[in-house]
Image 1: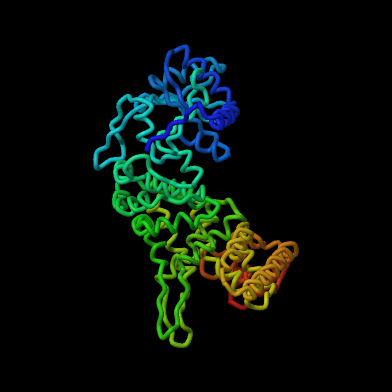
Image 2: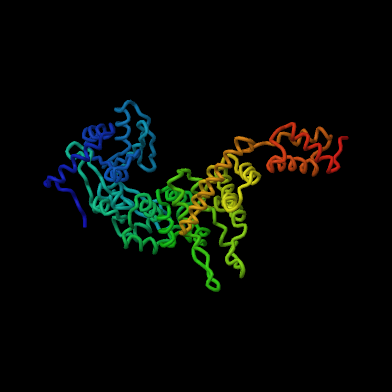
Length: 485
């Protein structure tokens, strides 16, 4: 059923007046005046309107014109003080930036798709055509900008009602919507995750039916949506939906492989898929760092590869942190994530995430804390935040014990750092100095002496001091039979 707002209802009139109060950005007044002068219709549409009703901030404004969006953009930019206009003639769009807001102008269009591409054939169309091509009802909402209909809501698919009921639904047949542009399946799950909405049943079932169509979407587009899911207040919502629709097995098989529980003689391990999502959810309120969240998502990624059953110990996942660390580059490469220091940060945290947990189970020695601080370096706080989120036991006493012990580890880290300065430290005697003193080229003995100095400092045998390190080096060299030539 198509819905349109009537001006006869007093409640609606008040509602529209409230909407007008939110159209305060200067572009709206300017676009309204110029659209009337050009004798064209203009509407603000899509995410800005959706977020207006949700009372969410939005820095992106989309204005659709029944005519030339580029021409209206150029005139608006000129009247607003000569703003720069970026024109994309191929797409019939133009963009201007006003302070921290991006405004895109586009001519209303209708689209048709070929089976092997999400890039449509585009032709000029009406507002109705433009709303028909929108992905979801909540993104098809439009507000008039001309003088005669300024602030009037045009809601042909009941998008406002879906907003009120927190529902994600396609405006047209969902099979056609998702087959035409399969990225919309990821977008639907992303919106459900970000907004905490439910995907309407027919829409959800269509995602599952059309999941194989995701293969025509570039990995860059997919990972952009996945990153937005990772950064949502409760990322688990999105990953559970991806799993239930079958998309996860296609786009992220390593994460899918975590799902399930094996049992031998009544002894079972926890479901590492749901554990991982619980860790990610627990981390989310404490960090908006995308890469720390990725470290949480990947911290147990190697458990399926390292899973073994021991009759005495039960299920084991020995060295899953080290195996996981080695898996990270291949995962990042396939998903088109950056292969730079961001990836190395995730690798480091995946490789080290068991260390603070082991420390918290044992007596926290200065030596162990020094080594952890040395290896984690400036990422020690991020590592501790990840490890605290990794405690997902339903046993409250166990959780309290771990968190209490983590406080001890954090206190020790501060004390050791203040006293010994071992975070990211370089040994006070360099390899070049050792080679020069003994007149030796690079060789095994030089490496042994450098390692001995580092270990002596980390074990507390000597302080992080050049004089003590030099004396220790000479003593160790004598024991190794390294003599000055």
